[in-house]
Length: 389
Image (cartoon, rainbow, N blue to C red; front, side, top):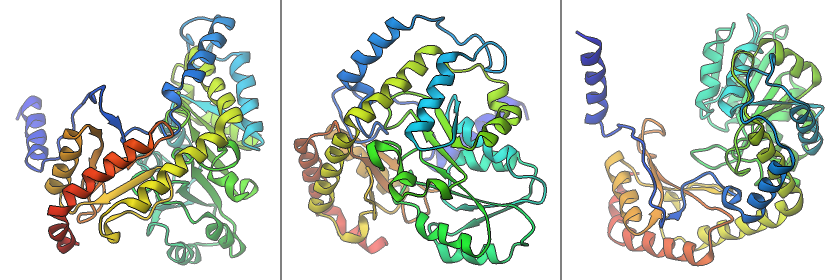
C-alpha cells in the first residue's frame, strides 16, 4: 500500500469516529469563552500601547538569528530572565520558545538511568513526550489528584534513587487544582523532586499573578516551575524557574533550546510588558475574573453533577457522548458563543464536556446571556444527559 493510501486510511478511521481535527477560525463577532487569554491581555489596550512604546525604544533585528548558544542570546534576554526570577521569588530562570519545549527539555534530560518519574494521569502531552525521550524507563502514573495513590507508589521505590513528581497547578481539561500542600507533606516520608506546570495558573493565582505555588507559599519545596506566556500573559514563550545549577544543566543538555533558533526580540519585549501589567494591574484583573467565575457557577441552571468542580477560569459542563457533546457546543456556537467540545479519548468516555473559559475581558452581560442559553438547552436535554452518567 502506498504512503498516500495509508495516510488516507488512517484519517478515514478518525473520520468514522467523529474525531477528525481541523483548523478553524472563530467568527470575529462571537463571544470568547474558549481561548486561554484568561486576563484578556492579548487584546489589552494598555499592554498594546506599552508594547509599541517599548519596541520603538529598543530597536533590534527582527529575528534572533540563531540559537542562544550561537548568536541568538542578548543582554536584554538575560536581564529579562533576572527580572522574571525576582518576580517569582526563584533563584534563576531560563527562557524557552514554548511550554512544550520546556517540558520536553526537562523530562527528557533530568531523569537519569534508574530514576523514577511519577506523574498525574492528567499531565500534559509534552511531559509524556519528554519522558519517552528520557534515559529512564521507570515511569508510573498516579490517579488524578489522588495523593494516597501517590504515597503508595512512593513507598514501593528504593530510597537510593531519585524520584520526580510531575503535576500541573491547574489542569487544563478539568480546571481543578493540584493538591500541592498534601503532596509536599509526602516529602517527610522520602525525598523527591516536584515539578509543577503552571501554564494555566500563571496570572490567575498568587500575589500579582505569580502562580499557584506562590499562592501556597511553596517556592522552597518545588524543584522546578514552568510558566508559560501564551495564555494569561497574552504573549508567547515560557520560562523554567529553579536553581542556577538547573539552568546550567538545561543549557548544556536541553536539545530544543540548543538546536532551535531563539524567540525574536519583539517576543521578549512582549513578555517584559506583560510582567509590568501583572505588577500594576494583576490583582485587579484577578478580582475581575474571579467575580465572573462566581457569577457563572452560582447561576448555572444544570444538575450539580454535570458541572466540573473548578475554581479556576476553566469551567466545564459534562455532556456524555462525543456526538451529544458536539451538538451542545454547536448549539452554543450558533448562539454566538465561542466554546469547544472536549471529547474522548482526550477525556474519559462518559466525561465528555463543553469547556468554558471565563476571562477578565468577559462581561456580566455575556455571562448571563451564556447562562440563559445553557438553561434553554438543558431544559430539553438534562433528563437524557443525567441518565447517561
